[in-house]
Amino acid sequence: MKILISIFLILSTALIYSQTREETLDWLNLKLEEFGDNQIMGTYQISIKKDDNYGDYLLFVRKSWNPLLNRNTYQYYSFVPEVVSKIYLSTKNRTNSTLDIFIRSDTEDIYVPEDDEFVSEFTISMKNGHNEITNRIQKGLLHLLNLMGNNIEPQKELFTN
Image 1 (tube, one colour):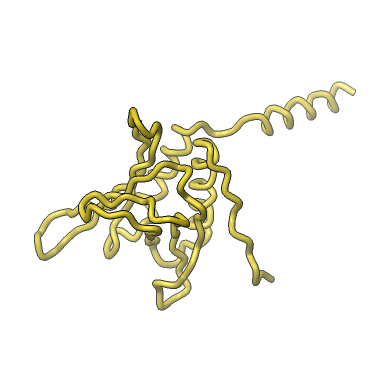
Image 2: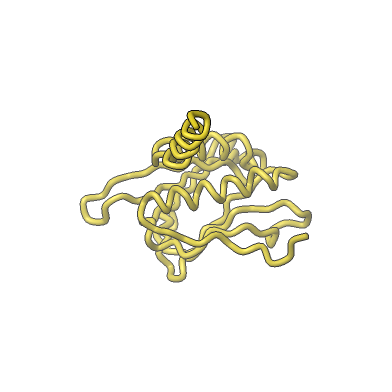
């Protein structure tokens, strides 16, 4: 009986524990730095910012090396979590089977400051051959948005074995 109660307590503790926003953000930034397509498309870092008018919003920064300018260049994407309608994986920008992560809004609510425009989607390009970690990063992004109040259903795998 004591063993059964011990197992129940261990399992219930494990089920209750969930990563915080900060832990999720740290994990995502670590994995995006390690598995982002550094050499061609750049790497991404995510931070949570606070605005008096909009509340918490996400800032994605893409850092890529520009050989012509001989320096890093930066591109920014910011949005409040509620505008994201979908985070999906696709090979649509690839000639091989490498999955990239696409963050999509049904309306053009993702702000790109250097272009002073709003877009409906942006891509996080991943290194070739790391589709399993790309899938985990997608789940981490969905978890982060869930923690920030936007519960998005993950994409369904239509053609699986």
